[in-house]
Length: 391
Image (cartoon, rainbow, N blue to C red; front, top):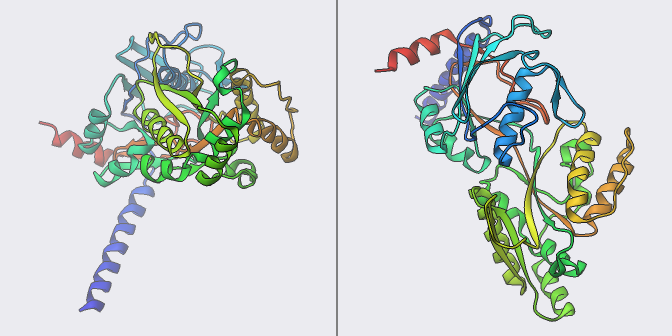
């Protein structure tokens, strides 16, 4: 009986491999509209107009990567709008944008005729549309990836190229004592953040670059030391109370901030989570959660970009990094920041995407790459089935 089950399972596996192989062996087809849903609402595509939020800035950068051909070393785009693989064909600020294929693109015309992007879509709506195959591509928070996969959504994830860190802000008296900042670094249970909040979709972080990037992250400890943190706080003496700011509209940051507050309390330190928003009248926190994305797989470029953001925010002395910095020089620059405990890396996690069954030849973008919509094509059979399923 057991042998028959094994043989049946093997036969099913071979059949699935044959089907997948047959589909992947098909020639790419031109045509069709790639349907996209995002959470952010982009109010202007003008590079001179600043985004109102981090999520809008990130989404705007993705669209810039589709409509501009030239990318600057710092990750921004320049040149003529429409010089990239697509150009803007229709624009409804904050709601909808349609991009049409650029027949004259230097990298070759995209396979799809257009990309239709709906903005301001909730996670619930994005997941539902993916499950019923009424959209082709949607962003999924890393912490929701496992649940989405269980629900039948086709998931794709990049390398862990996004960093979440605590940054102690310059000029805040409560965070002046380096030993207090060290207590925070040692008491935070990074593994718990990965396992329970990110649902294992990430890795603990102790450095400014991930292990896959430059290979030295293992030299920075990530394990929590609650006993050592408690002993250090006892040596300092006195009562210490700090605030940790987080994006009020971000459920992931809220969960992490609350988890950190619990870890700090166990060590005897008050580190209260404080929601922050553009119109928030509350005082400046002592520290805040900061998200950073690598602008390139090249560690030098990403580290330089991180330092440009973090050094002034944390009130640190400038850390010069040569253009072609060696691994030793990058390690020294990272160590110079981390040893101040003004920047406390927490976790590395990936960009996660949900895809419909008709998206073919998809490849998760590398660090700093835009959505690779110019390279994908739409499977006609899946498209036909989707259209027949519509009422």
